[in-house]
Length: 265
Image (cartoon, rainbow, N blue to C red; front, top):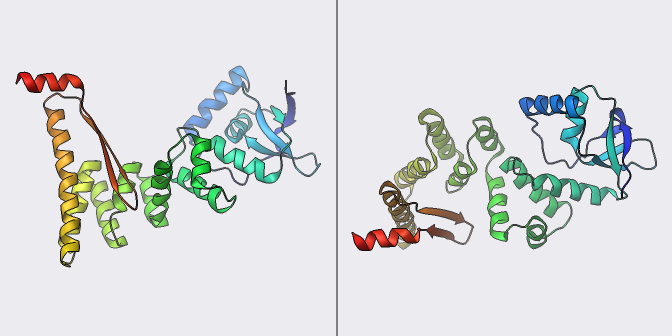
């Protein structure tokens, strides 16, 4: 069994590759209150830095921050023997697996694993238990300009809102759409419809290329309308849309009970 040691909080340094950049105040205060009452229930993971008396956090920065808020002088830790690169990769993987990691932070950490540590999408997907298409969709979010990403995070918009913006070719249209989302409170479907109208107004007709482009949008809208019609009729139909550089994939689920209702009708 690995030994748990108490290490002064002032001797623990954050991991520079910690993917989480935002620590919500309310959640941190709630965790600090819990630590005051119950202590730190799960030890932090850390590694010694160059045989000094300082340690780098491998996993547990959130617990450390809350412990400092709770005025703890020391925290329980497990010291692991790993090098700088292994520590960074472990920290990223540990955080990216948490469901509350913001989607842009998740996309940035996947990019870090690829660009800084040479991991392939296939290797990352295997480590995280995700599909390569899911990783590809996450990475595409980084194509959005930094100021657009900041606005999306500040306004609390969803990942699907962000994906919808990727179909726009210029920042002017992106900001027109973002302002409409903010002012009108558009949901994802309404945002996609707004983008379609915006695109139809500005797109230049270029023979069959434009026709095919519009045909695809018509098909997508037809699927969305069909799902909406079934839902309005009380059928629990659901659809998931995955969009990559090469294709748009729809997965539609309709309960078998709905087939009986359709036949009886």
